[in-house]
Image 1 (tube, one colour):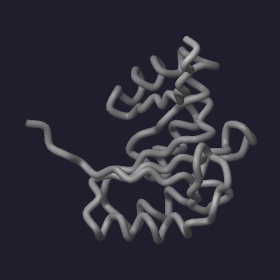
Image 2 (cartoon, rainbow, N blue to C red):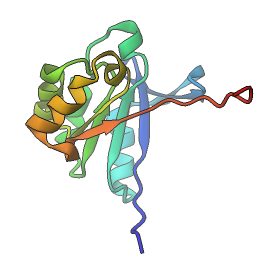
Image 3 (tube, helix red, strand yellow):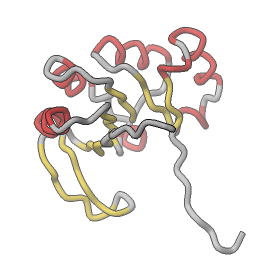
Image 4 (spheres, rainbow, N blue to C red):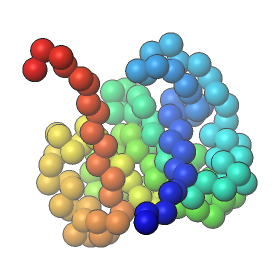
Length: 137
């Protein structure tokens, strides 16, 4: 039987955790470091941070948040949003992430998937795929 794991995913924009529906009507949900600490204390197995506007806005990866969180909690961290190349992956891992999550970059640069796997191993990579149901198909 598979073991159930609790992996909260925190959507981050402009350094804050936000909640919304389909990335619309976003409401501030708090400080990502404090929220991550709370999930850690409540028994989360891993935490994912996704900067939901990084690729769209071209903003930097949330390395400062990952550095702060990784110094306070001791479970695997995944970071996504704005990771465009292997140097971004290196910076995320050096900041304290255990894995990176790519989305837009997997489409724009499919070779990046193989490059990450070859350098850091497949356990280091999550590829997120956004899907929208179309009843006309």
